[in-house]
Image (cartoon, rainbow, N blue to C red; front, side, top):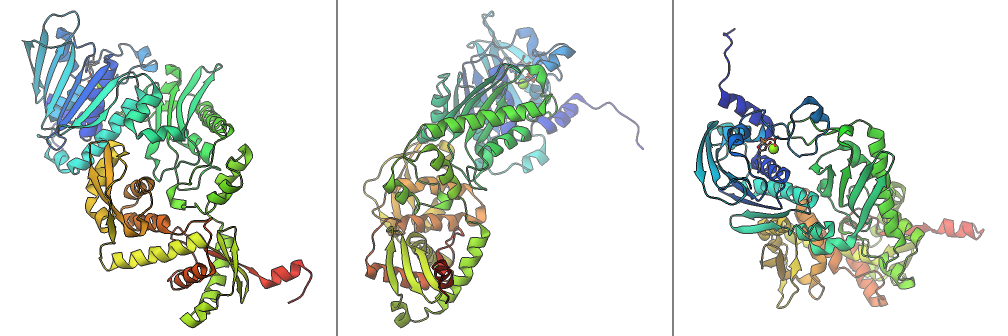
Length: 587
Ligand code: ADP
Ligand code: MG
């Protein structure tokens, strides 16, 4: 064994930085949180040089001249001073190690002035050495990071593409911005504004600034207080008709701090459990105020984890807050909206809408359940029976003999089949056919035929979604979709697949984005499903016998006629025996 040596300061800081400063987004998080703690009302962040140059400017308290060297040394903080404070933390920071860590892995300049001082100071830091000079500047603090990880090559090597690192930064900024509606934030990336909030203090305004405006219509307010524990919950929750394919849109804040808490996550999941299909997630922002001595935030260096004194109490409070918000939304009776993409379950809606455009409270809840994927038993039954039926539809000649009885509710085609009364969902059957046609083109690497649009509506999106569309331009073009980018928040459709020419293209944007955010290998497939679903004959559309025959001919030519691309059954046969039995006949 070698002899023991005291480590050099910069090395100690670099080791600590390993825990706190994982990537550019962690620097942004620490600096922006410091600015929030300093009481800033305006915070602007600029990102350049592959996310390795980061500048954060605020109009907060500034740092006192004598405190500047301390701010950059380890275990120095203005936020706690004695042991008791540790159980009463109301600021975002308290460990006093972020700046010390940052100056050990990058070149930092800090310009700062407090309101009491007529001059400002500039601190230049490199390799944990700080050099301070006088300078003129506005009140507040500007911290400029250059060449992050320049002296830690391994860290540098592990950074992902700038685009990806920026996505992490944007995510952190969105999360801080919505938890602090009172602060005006700007985030610039390579001279382009990616996020801008106005500091309106209003949660709905900040949501519409951070996300797309339309989202507001899908949300209900969470607002609950428990006088006994003095816990408060405030935020928004999406109604069950609006769901997303990834969990990322669940934001939890405790006393203004972004946290990942499995307890809270579970409570939210359970509140939605019987309302949305499995594999789909709601959009929820929940901000909890809990007495600081009821939570322990000091369990992880990046302060993301948290422990509660009374876990059960927090669980049931969050659960009931979300449930209450959802129940409130049910009682505000409104026309039913289209179900979300994955289920493309639109065939059920028009009928319900036709019969009564307003769905009473109880039925609406049931409807959400009804929209869930069918149970396995139904599916198995159908698979077997449809296979039998299909094997009899081998030739065109035979295909003509479909024995169509008619159309039920302008939605289902009824057939007098060998095995009984066969009911076929016209929308899903058509969707299956179109999907296979598109898939065949794609497999041959052929471009999906598309149509140029001369006029189309401007669509407002979240900046992160715009980047997503931009990154996937080639892929989308192969699949028939082409966009023009108007600003960091706006796009228009330039081309759409020929199959959906004449339809409102705005209606597919949500589904395209969901597809792009989903499983990488499944993106193309999901987009094809979206196109075929949009293009297919709708439920509630009256068809002539000739159209029904044509549709059945197309459907019976598919490779997988039993189920739609989402896995839902297309046809159901009620065996003759069953019908006969009902009437007391024997077959
Ligand atoms: P912590 O936030 O845990 O206290 P940091 O290393 O992040 O530790 O910051 C050290 C100290 O520097 C803070 O306690 C605060 O007093 C001061 N400080 C950092 N950033 C700012 C800022 N933007 N405005 C005012 N003071 C700041
Ligand atoms: Mg800090």
